[in-house]
Image 1 (cartoon, one colour):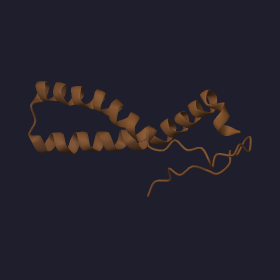
Image 2 (image 1 turned 90 degrees about the vertical axis):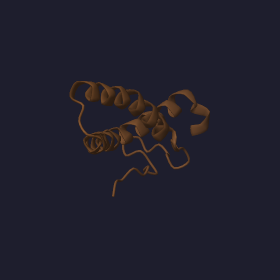
Image 3 (image 1 turned 120 degrees about the vertical axis):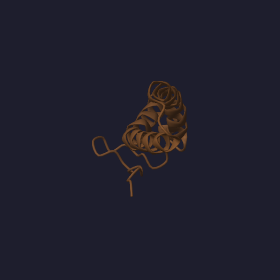
Image 4 (image 1 turned 180 degrees about the vertical axis):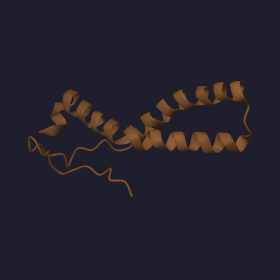
Length: 92
């Protein structure tokens, strides 16, 4: 459904990416970031409007899913960049 796989080589510089992967790091960061942003937003929304519970479930489910899909691939790329920058010995 979504292509979040890592290419084996960089298209620009031909750097070998096959042995270096971000693993579950981006997903963990997404849990922390989205939890930090969405829970206060949902509480504030509930304080202002007080909608039924099903509105919260639909609204915040869609918002969380959209944010995950939009941010997971750039976050995965950023984690790999940080590995390349700060753990250069792993890339030799």
